[in-house]
Length: 371
Figure 1 (cartoon, one colour):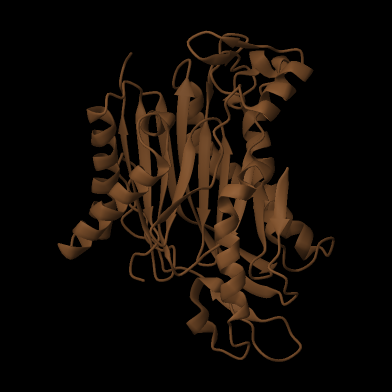
Figure 2 (cartoon, rainbow, N blue to C red):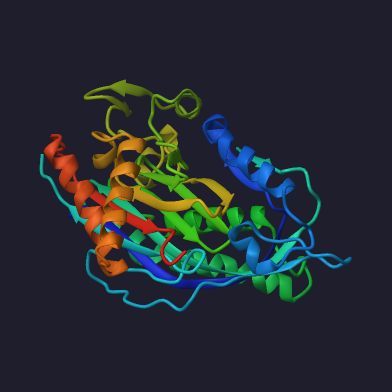
């Protein structure tokens, strides 16, 4: 099995200060994600600024007075987390959320959007972590990334919090600080992989709290959000034939060769990866693209999956099928951990029925559980 997953509940607590509607979006995704921040902007301007914090839920709240408003962003304690495939996560989202993973091996520059209000919401956010890693050239790097990337994320945030404590940074960080810490974690992870010349892995990571979602992606795995019945792709597939990716590859002296699809130097079918250091001088990088968006009461689920799923299913098909699975499970009063595991397996089974011959790993995160 070249794919690997990681789910870590209660990874860390952070004190954050951000404005409702303040998001970080990779430039390539701004057009497709415009409806998300348009809705957030309209919701923000409809708020009663003297309203109760709890009524605000994931949107945050603004209270009267001169001090920045504060909102609790903690989830409930995690439970039911195992180490086997098909694991559960509880403690994210409005009341809680659950994630389940299922795997199958088959052989063969960002935009910081602000909704136009200077009121900062300060909150202690508890983040939970999930990742899907799709290895190539062997499973060594995928397993190393699954076992260690979350540790680098935690250490990056610990460094940031240490600087805050000694006074070199503001007491509460903003969303850009979150994105920068995640980028640093990927960089450190890749440095740990020195010597893995011809083996690599993708990594799509979700950091979930009650108030924000942070998605980081390196490679061609993908994260899709289901919100209000619509599917939103929160990451970009890093393929060598993307205009900006191809430009970087050529600028570095590499070449995109069409051999069973576009490949860097005729070998790697993605333009970013952890590991694969023999292609660094050809323009393959390990830098993730990071998306940070606010939570919404309409959030339903996240699907993280390797490219095997997305080769045969659209974002809309995957999110619709996952929603149906979760809704059916809730009607049957199925345990949340079981419900997400079933949803992930149904997605895989559907992909196989459609002829997928690639390895497939899927993690479904229920953002509406208990809400």
